[in-house]
Image (cartoon, rainbow, N blue to C red; front, side, top):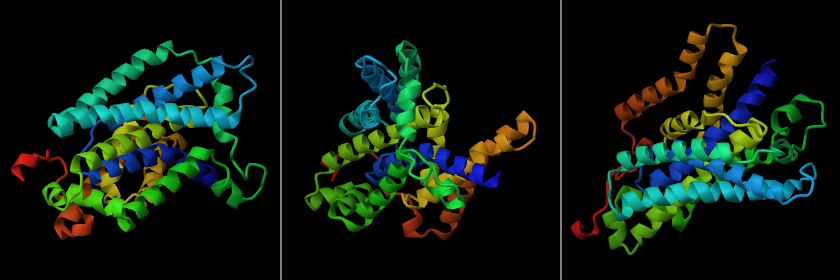
Length: 318
């Protein structure tokens, strides 16, 4: 039973990992995007639209090309979510609106638009498209604990882990990553050094949102096997909390997401009342607050958020 629980926790953690990786990229540019919950909803909507378009092009919905179904779902999810990031970037970079207010507006917009339009999407054959997302489980036919724990997931699980590791390396070891971090720490200094601050901020907002949108796609097409559930936005808030929990380090987010995933699904394995089940689900937020307190006490630079996080950049004041 424990192996099954851990397997499901790792699988469910993918939703949080995509969201936190995307949000980390955005925050490294100095933008706190509280629109991630709505953006993840847009990603889920985009994935559904893409799969619906693809399935309608087939003479027989049971004859799904697995590779095409996955690629189309990913592209549409990233496009829809990327649009949400672009809108957020326009509000906060070009118009210099308050980042917190803009993010909450994007969450409201994304959630509302998704809930309205998803009912119009023809979901006929989604179960066959969903099978394509889990068909890449390389160890499904092996009967041992190692394959059950590490080799029986759909492709998006491995993509999420790989993305977090790649992003971590880029942020620490490459010129692009160092420039992005410079923009988030002091945009005026980065601007004076010849870095195109606006370009980096826009790219971080759009790319971060596009990656976060894959979390919504995974939840619908993999975890729920093609069915719909109005709870993606709640997981978006946990993804934002995970960024703080992992101290803005995408590679740490892998273990953090597994912990969050385990706590989120734990009530399903416990014989307790509904009230206590809901209390368990708030533990990740409590732990995040504790982490914030600890990092504030020790005040180590590597454990702090970007210095310019949440602040609009006015070039004329440089």
